[in-house]
Structures are given as structure tokens and as C-alpha cells.
Length: 181
Image (cartoon, rainbow, N blue to C red; front, side, top):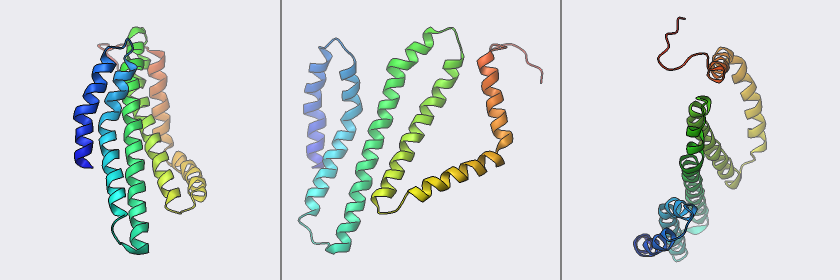
């Protein structure tokens, strides 16, 4: 199945890329680039899953294999979503921010990209914890209380962060200006 994934990557994807290059939109080219390597990985996961059906691992072994395959599938989905975030930012949002006169969007774009990736990873981890049979409602409630405790403990950090965002949004100075603190 790893070989089948490589054949898929080399032969079928090259044919799909040729067909997609003839279209007027770039969205299909972006989607092909996003899905190429994760699809090879998914084919390998499917092959490992099919192969595991012919082996005798016992009840506990199958539970462990099920958990491993769940982790691999969720990791693959996270990989795809993170590549999608990168592609959308690079091809659609970044050109829009370069056309504006404001520097705020140029400074906030990398932060938003990282924030979205972290959110996708955290949702994936919560999904994995839920699928492993654990109750995540108490974890989410604890994160809310922990977030409050963190906010109180990190109050100087947060005030500096919001102060920095206020300075960036007001744009009182540009690159090259002298600032005396």
C-alpha cells in the first residue's frame, strides 16, 4: 500500500495536475498540492488497517491498533487542515493584506495563521481524547477555570500584549523612526 500510494502520487496526481492546469481557477491546483502527500499517507493507513485484519492480535491488541489508527487518521486530517490554512493565507489573504496601506494586517497575519493552526491541533487532540473513551467535558470546564487562573497570573503579559496591539493599530510610528522609551 505504501507502493500504491507512491504510484498514486507519481502517476495519478501528475495526470490530475495536467488537467487542473488547463482550468482557469487556481483553487484546484491548490487543493491538489494540499492533498497529494496526505493522500499517500491515507492510502498507507488504509493498507495497514486492511493488513491488520489478517493478523491475530487478541482483543487488547485490536483495541491498541484501533487507537493507533485513530491517532494516524486524526493526525492526517490535522495535517490537511493546517496545509489548507497555509494555502488560503498564502494565496488569498496575503495578497489582500499587501494591497492595503495599513501595516496592522501585515503584522497580525502570521499571528492569526499560528492561532488557527493551534486551534485545529487542540480540537484534534480533544477529538482523540474523546475517541479514546475519556470524558472531555470536565477537561473543557477545567480549561476554562485554568484559563482564568492563567489570565490572572499573566496579567502583566496580557497588558503588554494588548498595549502592543494598541500601538500597532494606532500606527504612531513607522519602521525607521526613533522611539524613546
